[in-house]
Image (cartoon, rainbow, N blue to C red; front, side, top):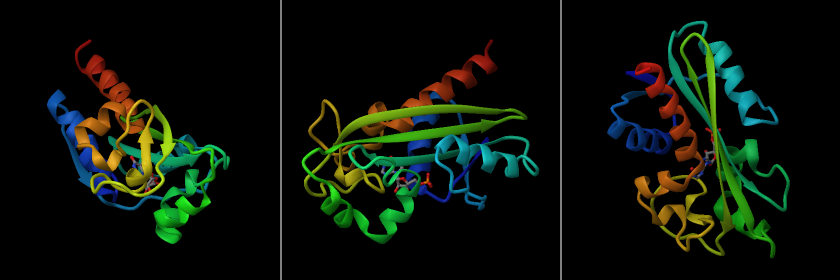
Amino acid sequence: MIPFITTNEGKFEEFRTFLEPLGLQLSMSDREYPEVQADSLEDVVLYGASVLSRELDEFVIEDSGFFIDPIPGFPGVYSKHIHGSIGLDGVLKLVGTDRRAHFEACILYYDGTSHVFKGEVTGTVATERRGTGGFGYDPIFIPDGHDRTFAEMTPAEKNELSHRGRALESMAGFLRSRDRP
Ligand code: IMP
């Protein structure tokens, strides 16, 4: 079992839903590690890995963010903080007529070397919250080509479209080709 170091149960559930059917087992480890305030998600996971690798031989970490396209970089690396401060209602008030948005995910798998996998999904900000599934900004994000928010989808449906699902697909491809060359 590879430890996935996160305090976010929603993320862990999406990892598990994606990886278990492929025979890849992860355990959730909610230990803390430093999350630097950097401009890119990749810098955040690379720094986290540089600290964790002093104690662990193998692990997975992930950093992700929600981006409202007409407000460059926002909330981006501050997604968790903004969600906890002004909340989804506060975010909805900031969105104007251009409602384009996207999510990005950056997964780092460490096995002595840091391997980075990225994913992105584009869409729009809904005019109100809809749905009860998922976590974070899911109730207000509608992926392109769909009319339901992520929170109105099952974890498996969301994984087929999401930033995290895309990054997980790359990581799973890497792990499978490494284990069965
Ligand atoms: P972090 O990766 O723990 O720094 O947190 C990223 C934050 O971005 C989360 O706490 C959520 O607020 C938001 N976020 C990232 N991925 C998703 C997602 O798939 N759905 C909804 N919100 C997300």
